[in-house]
Length: 239
Image 1: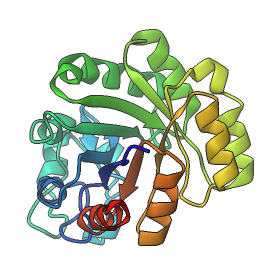
Image 2: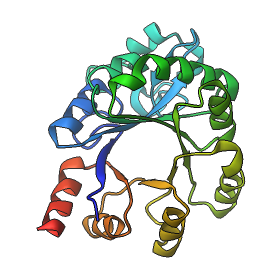
Image 3: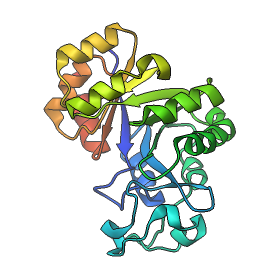
């Protein structure tokens, strides 16, 4: 069985502030094959890399990402001397690696998000080993399929059963290459999804034994907060 890829979850957030350039550099230093990160639209229409809809977790101020320009967001100090980067700024140092761009759609129009991501994918996908766009929101991925069918899509699955049923009900419309389940998904279900032809990129895997068990199921990627730790766990398993 092939060893899964290691993708840094928002970079290496245990070593540097999540979703910053320092965090992505650290993930690569720790041996990650690439990174998973979140994008939202700033007020100017630029895609920026940030998980939350506002910056209160970092700055103590409820600054809405959607209400600020990319330039203004870049001037915010998230705690490590860096502000919110643009998608382009993040993709450049990750050139040649596997990137998983997760689209956050709770504070933006799905169609507008899909259009922005499609434009970015056309510019960047040829410069990366893999360029996958994922989301919990099927409407983003359906729109992306119509706009840029050549861009790989990954459907994220929420561990909440009700949300998961909603997401899976859109499989035919999304037509994803990959499904991105939570680490707690049962082995039988993972094997069923693999048998159906989907690549599995599992989030967020921080436990050594869990990583080895998932590797035995044949998953494609492990998305983790600890790239070096999980890499070492898989190497011990191999050897």
